[in-house]
Image (tube, rainbow, N blue to C red):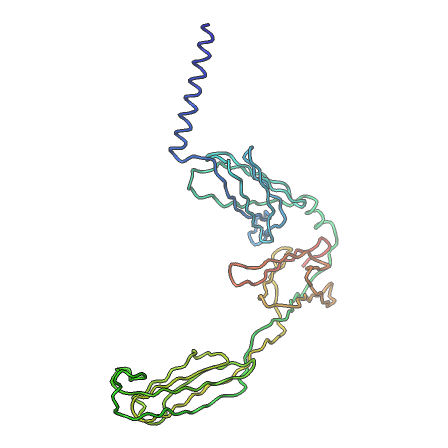
Length: 335
């Protein structure tokens, strides 16, 4: 009977401690939550210029209860969301796997609610096999590398101009008596007139000018329905509240078109990797290089194939949308 009483007391105390702990956690806003983990995966190298981003790295995050996975992209970036159920101050492990690199595990403790999550940078060590392949083969030499591509640019050509005079007839010094149109002050009877210019199909107006050129110009006003860089149609409207006035509308006619031009770029080389960036309108990318002294042309193509290098590409989506290329030499080649 006595032992039964002790057990009941122990259970009661345990329940009280659990309830008090739960109340304390809720009071301090400690609840299970989802956690977003962001980071980048790069190659380990003492020369920071050779710490290349690594794509297709399998990243696994776990807190021993919840597990989530993601792959790094061409910039090395990864983002993992551990679902609801992760407690503050819990321990989370990040594991990184790639066939060409040694696996890596990082562990960290979660912070308090509302505290910022740190950004993780994982440096992976190349495998011994990858390093030995580079050193074991007699290498062909790649020299005088150039990148050629076609850039599309929008151009406009001045193909003419438009000039149109028009008059607004009005009798001066007649009270308006609230019969529209009136002068801006509302005192004098006014007349209104307009003219519309058409630039024609596929054409636009530029540098639109409208002005009074004859008559009592101080007592006139003229406006257009377009800015100085107008569209195909431009309408000028004039108001005269003294005598008859003459107006002139002028504009230049342009035709927009897409033009192509061939460009040349020279890549930057760090270690065994060359880097180059091209504008978003680039097309037909090819790499020209001397292989053991023989000039050759290598169309890069959508598959990013080079016989002497492995290439990756990514887009600077948060800046100018330029395209970043990185090509790492295969074992049988050297710069």
